[in-house]
Image (cartoon, rainbow, N blue to C red; front, top):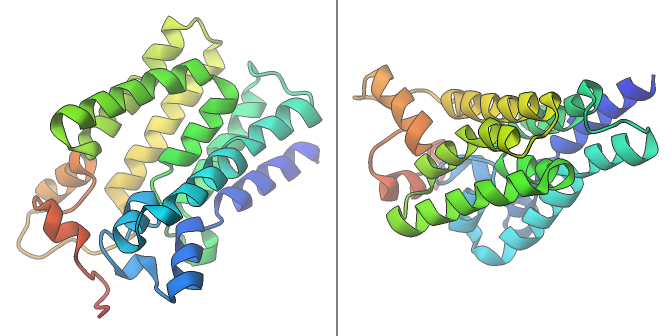
Amino acid sequence: MELAGLYIFSYLLGAVPTAYLIAKLSKGLDIRQYGSGNVGGSNLFHLMGKGWVVPMGIFEIFVKGATPVWIGQYLMGLDRSSFLLMLAPLLAIAGHNWSPYIRFQGGRGIVVAGGSLLALAPWILAAVLVIMLAGWAVTRSSGVWVLIALATLPVWAVVAGDPLVIRWYCAGVLALVVLKRLLSNWTPLPEGLPRSKVLLNRLFRDRDVDDRAEWVSRTPRGAD
């Protein structure tokens, strides 16, 4: 029963749509109707500026991402080599990506995953952040470098000599993020582009179209 409670709590906590709530409560805007339509930090930044991204990031790292791990470890005595512990943060990421509070829409789970890695394997998180930031500094393109960095997660777990479950957890994080990118927020495919092109754009660029400026400035649900 305790484990079931942890898993339900982790999913429902992860599902709290932080970016959606910030935009809705502060400006009365539905973030899903603006820019990329993503319920996450990048869309919130484009819509409302960096001032709101910091508190959102703190909540998603330390509360949504790390708390399920800390509860499992320090209150329930689960070891970081336990498969039972790994399911809690994976459910938190899944809740963030497909939140029942907003019709199973959500973000990409990157920041929540970062919070879970901070609690489970901070050295892996540091390695991934270096790749992301270095790639962005050179190319000014975050989508592909986030994917590349996440793809190296299981490799870093092997290099660090982490338990097998950590390696599987890293693979699980990558799978959830990739699945979310491909499904997006159940939005229809844009007209005039073949399905294969859209899916490749979603996977590698984290958007449907080639033009980034067009993507971040659009109103996909017909909002003003």
